[in-house]
Amino acid sequence: NLDLMLGLAETTQLEPDTTLFQNQGDPGTALWWEQAAAQNRKDLNALSYREKASQTAIKATKGEYYPGLALTGGLIAADIPNLLTISNAMNIGIGLQYNLGAIWKTGAKLDGAKARLQQVQVSQSMLSDRIKLEVNKAYEEYLLNSRKIKVYASAIAQANENYRITKN
Image (cartoon, rainbow, N blue to C red; front, side):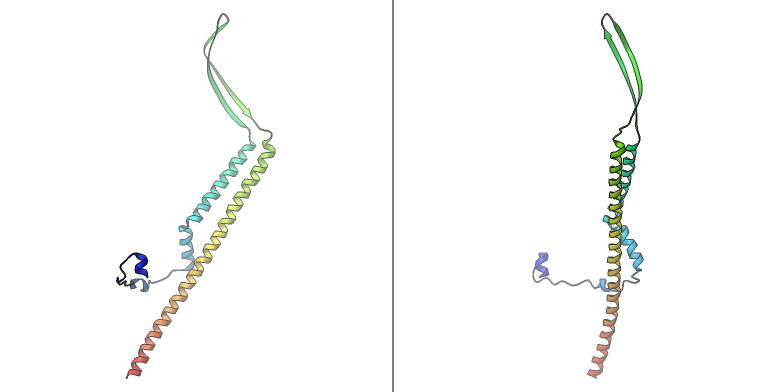
């Protein structure tokens, strides 16, 4: 069936790679695996970027509380026949603008931005907890299965010894 699924001839003999089943050495600690998982998970990285964006949105929303300052300038050339002729006149100005409606509206916008930040932080903590649970579960299963392999290896050795004794 595997030959058919891979598109190989049906008579192809597949040999498993047994080097993967060799003892890989120290499995490390669960804490090390959790840190590695946290660094390599792209969804956790994306949530940290969303948190930074939410914090920036809060700062931008707080900026609406303050008045706006504008510097303006211009160059004028006017020619009014028989009355006035001005060439290369410059004007410079500073403007200050404040929206009184921002006093009420900005508070609601700020609350919404803070709520979005809280939502991202809760999502981030939930994902971190889920990653820890998954890593711990996989690590415990790995340790359990490695112990099972050791027990099965000793059972094979005992069975071979029993067979040798029975044969004699």
